[in-house]
Length: 415
Image (cartoon, rainbow, N blue to C red):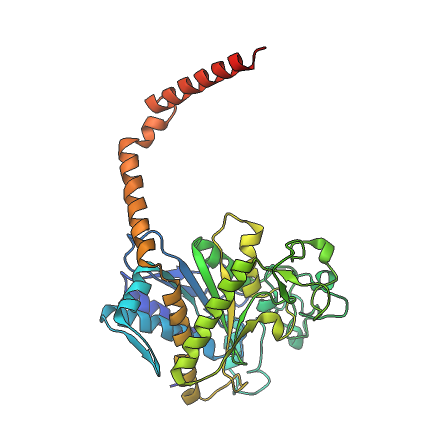
């Protein structure tokens, strides 16, 4: 076996959709890459009559040299679909999941896998031998800012999301959570979401308004990371936040006065879900991943997990979406052997399935959803929409009651 190339990743998703047509939907991402590639994602959804399903969005392949991420997600989708259709559980080394848990995941959640965010970069990286300079390519292949110089091609897609993107303004002076220099690996692009790859992720998340968990699979350090990446967290001062421009120029310095706000309950949720993935990974073969805030590694701007987490702050009507990064492979190597990669796939898939189990609605939530669906179905049978339209009886009654209320108000208001 070997790492899947760009064509094989897309072919695998098509094959899974063809093999399991009633359980999957193929999602064509709308934004083509600079080299003309169209990306695919796959939705796993059983029992479509259940309306209250949370979504989990898993992405990988944003950095071209991190070869193993797409294999992890393709394997995850395959495992869930095969176990569901054979009424079997899943076993990853010392971590196992029952057939009931697999059925609940498929029937009561939406699992979305987008294995290869950056196909242009992956194709370029995989065209060379592992560990070579070309194989170590990180960015996409957009030449717009290169000035015709090959070494300046590309944008770091994971510094291109709309979270404190303009770091020269939003971070403390002399800090470099990204780069304005196209020759650097962390070049942030010409604006937030300037790249088709990051816009595809944005579009995909927007497609699932009930998304509750977002996980971006990277390598390598052996971490499960949660927001924020720009500075240390605090839970007491909401005004000290990424949204407050008065805090510009202060972010990114460890142990100073500035820290970024997280509501206390949300911080507990982030830490709990991160620990679920960490513990799932550990149970496979004893790999001790660290679960911690992203800033603990180094300050970052424009990253996917932070952007995902911002959505509820910018629009409180949205479902709360928790963003994470898994950095697989504690050996600090972008290019493990395939034998090593097989173990890494088991590790990370166990962590992701554990998160799916954690996200699955409980029995009472399922029952309540069923009751509400039946209630609204009955309501619309009795009070049909056309009866509420202009000139319908319920509309006339509402206007008549309104006029009575207005008249009573006028009488009460008279001296």
